[in-house]
Length: 318
Image (cartoon, rainbow, N blue to C red; front, side, top):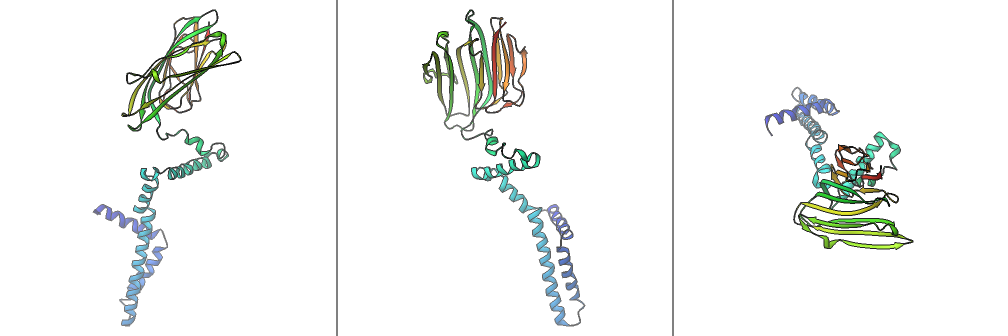
């Protein structure tokens, strides 16, 4: 303990003495201790000296320990334990602290939200074990007429993503695409390129199709293994058709936290136009190039896009 720390301890000690009943208790001890020097009887002197000393020491020690527990080292260490990384690494302890934080915020600002805004709902937005993070994200869509008379457009969709992981252990990168369309439209959905760090993984792609009352149901899915690094370059290109008279839109809801996602749309035939809108986000995407609700635009979200948020693109003809 250096001189400055020692002076701080003494200062806080006297502050504690003045702010509590300890000052009274200690003052009585001082009076008894002082009396030991003026008492006529030697026996009274010894009794007063011992009693006064005991009271003064006890009062000072009690004041000092109270300061430590409320203002000083003990309080600081308790905070470190209760809110430190090691303590919160335990799932149950983290849940306890999280529940108290959410409950306190709700009770302070809007008690009526106690039941609708349940704690587990909010926790779903936090990273979980084996989480993937899209450090960068750019999707580009080139749009053409495939069959103008039937109002069918074809889209070449390319997606570049930098995927970040918490460690170099095995992580899964899943993808699942679902579509349904009338059988007579004969729409096309096909992944043409799939790469991780330049290595082809098209063999992992699985396609399934079924028919129900003239409606074709198409499923395309895969799961890629990421292991040995903490960052991966992910590239996918896909050809897809859309019938403007059936479902003239694309909806993407991300299952990952995505940093400032960027989407570029270019209708190569200018009598096709697209309208872009965010889905479930707290803020809107910014149009950084071109013009929304036109044949060309580039949209970007201004910050981190959370899980279960995304965007929609609606197509039409002029």
